[in-house]
Length: 213
Image 1 (cartoon, rainbow, N blue to C red):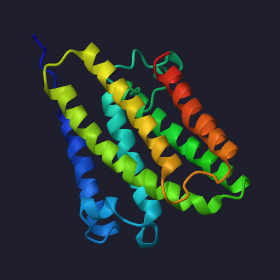
Image 2: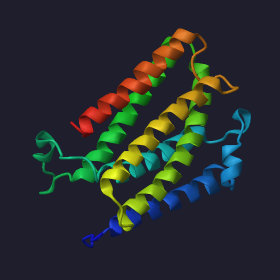
Image 3: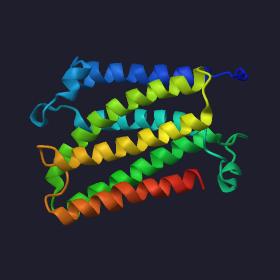
């Protein structure tokens, strides 16, 4: 297979930057914990939960954008016409801004949902578990991103592989939320069903439609 040489130095910067950020996360915010200590951390021992969750979420969005931007068909005309200092968003910029905006909106709605049904106490468990899961997920995405940009692969098959992994990861995450020993989702079953449908499934479908319309 012949592949045209591309200048992907920015990919290396993104990957190395993400790894460096995770080293700081474990060293500073998690008190020199290793990966095993972080993943095995109990609720009562968790520290700096909010900054940890924010950092992990941003790194995850960056890695997902690294993977998906190669397959996004076009940047919408209404967005590509916006120029800042004579520059316009490329597919990577469009994808990461979309993902970050999507995450911010979903997290705000999640907070409002939990607060409105009186289950705000479960937010800490959700944040801790999401941080751990997204941490592992982003490490997998770092590896997949490196393979995508630096190995001669069939892009069509690789795209289907990535989508299958996304779906499997999504299903696994919600199963963990449902059956974890600590309360993560709302206590009543119909609120659990409502959360998964409206704040997990529907946003993903909207995001897919927006990126791959």
